[in-house]
Image 1 (cartoon, rainbow, N blue to C red):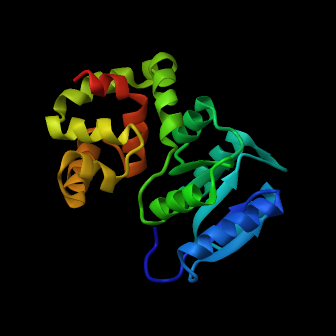
Image 2: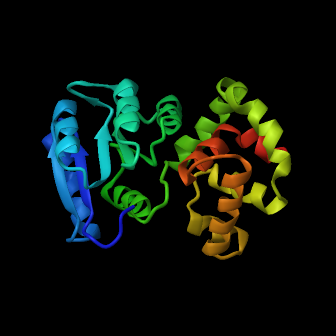
Image 3: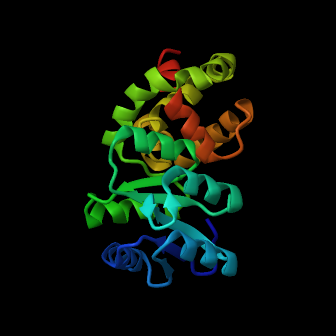
Length: 226
């Protein structure tokens, strides 16, 4: 997340009520945050093209011109440096896990109340990730049955290189815990957690913290068995 200048947040949703609600939540976090609105995918792409200083994108998976995960894939390909948070009516594990697999840093169901949305946005703006814990727990069960074979070989090959503490941290964040919550649960400092995550990133040949979270979620069963 960019620091210094006020963050510019793009809110892409075809319902003005949703856009207004999200705008009010961001204002409650900081009056310095600037919001830009898009009512369609084409509008969003136009804004992204004209305003390269967008620091965060909140996007609905269902809006005109946006074909769910194909649109999300396009955004991650064309604008990989812009963090994306999905705001969706879907709260089933399949959608959450697929969105995570496409590299989003947050997933907020539209059924969430204002306080939960505020906490989630606060986490992602501070550089963390935010996924709904209850849905993640369901996702883990599905992941172990449906997608583990896609990354299982990699997990078996590399998990043995991790220390016991690194495995503990991976197991904790796979359940949706933030860096600060992980530190609290393991009785260590947040900086220590970040150092361990940096070591994990190198050992697993991953490129970002988001990839570490995705790997942890998809391989939670293997990690828990170590």
